[in-house]
Figure 1 (cartoon, one colour):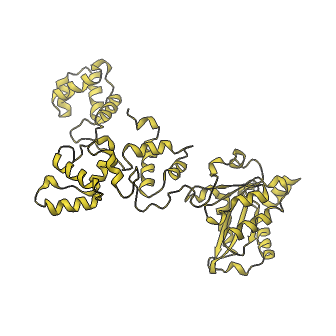
Figure 2: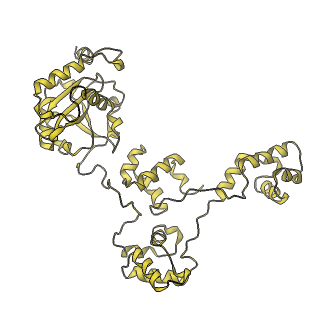
Figure 3: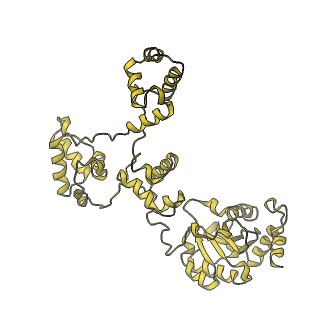
Amino acid sequence: MGETARIWFTPRQKAELWERWKNGQCVADIARSLERRNKSGVYRILALTGGIAPPPRRRAPLALSLEEREEISRGIAAGRSIRRIAAGLGHCPSTVSRELRRNGGRDAYRASEADESAWERAHRPKPCRLAPLVELRWRVAEKLARQGSPEQISGWLKEEFGSDEEMQISHETIYRSLFVQARGVLKKQLMAHLRRRRQLRQARSGTTKHGLGSIVDAISIRERPAEAEDRAVPGHWEGDLLSGARNSHIATLVERHTRFVMLIKLEGKDTNSVVEALAHQVRKLPRELRRSLTWDRGKEMADHKRFTLATDVKVYFCDPRSPWQRGSNENTNGLLRQYFPKGTDLSSFSQAYLNRIAQRLNERPRKTLGFKCPADRLSAVLQ
């Protein structure tokens, strides 16, 4: 079925892969979003077409449809002749005869299998414009070798050969001829003359090019222990910042097993202030409640290794734009807006006041806990 099929992505996954790539996500982020252990499979799919999304495939208007193939199958089962089947379909008898011959004859014909085989046979790459036009190909290669950009080359050709249709080409077609090496019309060595010497065509609007950004040695949520995932063991926390007016923030922590909440006053959003405040609070917890912390991708946790060193709590980072991976924390932050509406200056609240608000949440019955309170659930854990 070809190299693409052996990479084992469903059509839906491939569509999502290309959509994320066009939106500027890097290979590592796409792999994490598709729950792949490594990025090699994603890279191989992108590399097959040089990072350029293949156009959606369509059936030829005159090709037999699955419904017509099912009519052929029913006609065979009823013992009808090829001419009679063809007349019912409005096709030539030779079309039906050729269809049967390609798919095992009357005795072995199966409509669904025949349709799938026809779809695979029709998978042919579109001929490149540069392939038959020798002079145009030579002009493009010459200009590329002189460090001309595809856009400059396309514009120069319009000026130099304005009336000659065979000497016109768009800059995107030149890029495709370079990056889609299966076409073999321009030598791969010419890519070295491009200003950006990447191997894949990338979206200009790309913003996530380095995995977990500026967070050095960040550990992905996909490496988090299974016991944290299924909430079976207490001591695994989710955290984030709740933002207010005048660049004010408080840190929110939620324990995944009991939904117990802690609110922490912050002096600033910088990583030093956040890590210091979190470490001070977490060190007060019993050892059995200090296992892991799952955080968003904010730079306020850039110094996560110092936090781990101070508390012995490893920090795991969520995927980009995936707040649902910290669902308990997101839900809690929503509840907190009852007490801290948007636009409130959070710097005016003392730690004692934050503790009282956290206590209200912890003494509130929760449906997800069978209408028990987080405080009661935590007390039972510590007994």
